[in-house]
Image (cartoon, rainbow, N blue to C red; front, top):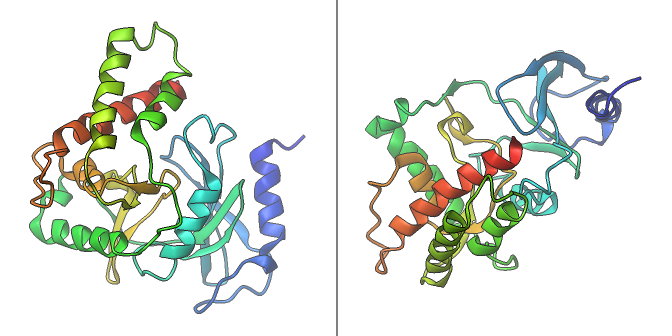
Length: 253
C-alpha cells in the first residue's frame, strides 16, 4: 500500500494541469519523477520534470503544526513574494504540498557568505523582501512561539531554569521597539542559491512578520551590527534565535 508521501506525490503529479506555471517552458503531459532531493529534515522533496520543464515538489511534514509551521501564513507570504525575483516561483500550494520552480545554481556555504560581494547580494535581497508591506498579519510573538516548543518538551529536555531564561529574553525582544517585516526565520546558508540571475532564497515555511535583524543575525552571527537598533535588542534577539534552533531540534528528535 502506498504511504502518505507516495500518495500525495502521485496525486500532485496527476493534477499538473492545475499548476500555474506562467512564462517559460510549458507542460504538455504529466511530469515524471526525476529523483528525491535529500538534505532537508522536515519534509520530503522531489525533483520532477518533463521535456525541458523542471519543478520541485515538497510533501509537507505531517507534524508541521508541532514544529511551529503555519501553512496558510506561508502561502500568504509566498503569494506576496512570488513576483519579487528572489524566491522560486510558486506553481501550486496547499496545506500538504508545495510545487515550485527548480533553481539551478550554487548553494551557499557559511564560508561563501563571508565574501563581501556575496554578503552584499544576500543583504540586498533581504532588504528587498523587508520592504514589501504586509500590514494585515499579526507579528510573531517570540515568547508565545518559544512556548509552543517548550510545552512539548519534558523537564528532562529543558530545565525550569533554562525555560525561564528563554522566556525572559523573549519578553525583552517582544517589548522592544522594532518595526515588523517579512522574516524568513530559518535563513541558513543552504537556503540561499546563487546563479547568473542573482540570489534566490528558498524554504519559507517558517516565515512570519518578525524582527528585521533576525535573518541577518541568523546568517552573520552575534557580531552583526545594525545602526537602526537604538534599544540594542540584537544581543537578546541572537539568544532567542539560538534558542529557537535548539528547541526546534529537540522537538524533531
